[in-house]
Length: 207
Image 1 (tube, one colour):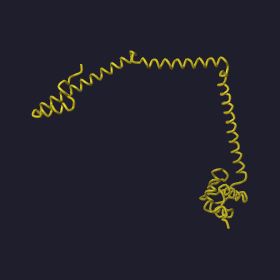
Image 2 (cartoon, rainbow, N blue to C red; image 1 turned 90 degrees about the vertical axis):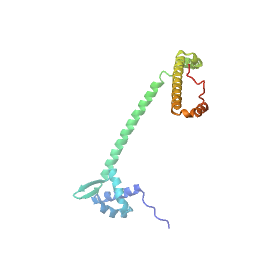
Image 3 (cartoon, helix red, strand yellow; image 1 turned 60 degrees about the vertical axis):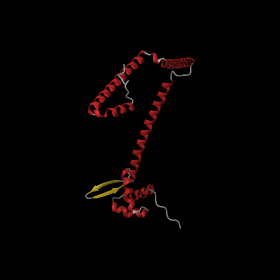
Image 4 (tube, rainbow, N blue to C red; image 1 turned 180 degrees about the horizontal axis):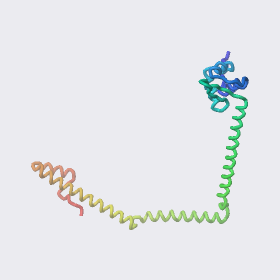
């Protein structure tokens, strides 16, 4: 024997609403939890189902004294449906208006872009100008070495490198002098170390 299928959330909502419609009375939550199982809604889920109906304005609730009462009339559902319908009508109207604006905008953009002979000639001329511009850029790149601005920038870079090289040469001579003064007994070892790192007798400032 197959197990009976439980109610879906929407079916539970319909059954709980039916309790209100049949009696048109006010209920405490604990009373609804007792009536729910009679409609196939287990008591543990009654609270969540009723709250979902409250959130959708299908069930009203109010606190009277220390107790919270729930109620709903068929007119409540009607009012909620009318409100939803009005909202959908407004959304539909706005969508139609926006659609017509986009259609008009599209037509305005297309105007002047018809496939005429003049337009085809203008497009061909534009394409030719773009190709010529591209070719000129390629030729200019080939002659960049002769560009005065490029040559000036290159000379500036060479000057900076030249000054830096002489500055480091001066630092090396200063270090050699310090080593000779501090370790006079290690003259041969120092000279051997200099040769190993490439500091020979012809090491000199760049001219």
